[in-house]
Length: 435
Ligand SMILES: Cc1cc2nc3c(=O)[nH]c(=O)nc-3n(C[C@H](O)[C@H](O)[C@H](O)COP(=O)(O)OP(=O)(O)OC[C@H]3O[C@@H](n4cnc5c(N)ncnc54)[C@H](O)[C@@H]3O)c2cc1C
Figure (cartoon, rainbow, N blue to C red):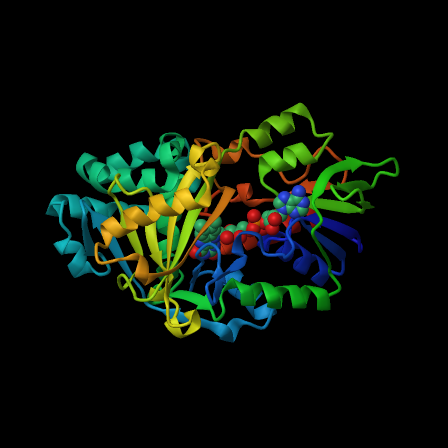
């Protein structure tokens, strides 16, 4: 395609990657972001005297697309790789599950259950054709391979924690993709899985990415909220903004969640709007806590206890050296909920109290004196629910509006939500559009 002028709505990783690849291909690109800064879900905030991501982020050795972007923006030598440990909180007790011996010692499952759990992971990691799994409910697939006992004691609480009640309509692709991601490094020939982070967190990434884009000639307009995309008389799509301004482009890409894209693009067909509105999202409410000491040596503590309101505990400082966190420990307490969940209407103070009281139940030595900061981050559209036949129901990137495209994370059909998959969608869908 000859050089065109592109407008991109949304300045998250998706919008930034699209702009980067477009300008590398000789096109002009402008990003419009409603927030005062680009970054979206990878944005950072100040917690006491520490600035780090609002939501936790980790990079895997097998995240080759993310690592390519980091190379492009000059940060590939700023990643630190660490071997981390995983914990489980079951019936009020914490257990380590980081190696084979710990796995064999793991309580609540007998040897046969453990064998079947291990087998399920091996089977999932060997499957190449995920399309077949789209037709099978995740509950059915897990019960088949793991048996009822392991399903009820391990998988069901984990599914509930990650998907809320939406697990009932989720296909087996979800668990397949999760296992594939965790075993990706081994599949790709890397000896062991390690988790990585960029020194300074995603703030460093966004700053360098933004600088690279500006050097490439990309225009970034923040505090610009798109109100609608219309087809103008001269066949050029036009973006109208809430500040009363409007701009026309040769091509427009919307990177916002499906239902928002449906509202924004005014003359889509009823079938397109239906397909976009059919995509269900889970949101997240995440309490970040800064402590004066560590709580464990686990990066992730999975919680199978239904009494605890959050999904798990992510102890960022088990990965990130505390020297980058002002000597403190940083812990995230996330809860995944549907966007209509009443918890979204609760004030921050109530959520903090609810989460921290339960956090203290898990760690009875913890007092308010140990807590140096606690803050609530929320996002309503985070993970799409991978329902049965999900990929069949998706709206393609091309729309019936001339030169208007919708590219967002709902296009992740065979992966979990992460930056690497977001970059993959941006790169592959852009290739599709340009060809
Ligand atoms: C709790 C949590 C944990 C995660 N953990 C990891 C992890 O460990 N590793 C990993 O790789 N990934 C992780 N991710 C995923 C990662 O953050 C996402 O894959 C990625 O940030 C998605 O980028 P995006 O551009 O698609 O969406 P977004 O970041 O949501 O970008 C959309 C942008 O559009 C803007 N916008 C919205 N409406 C308008 C409008 N009308 N006009 C203009 N702009 C608008 C928004 O402000 C936003 O900046 C995690 C995410 C969450 C929430």
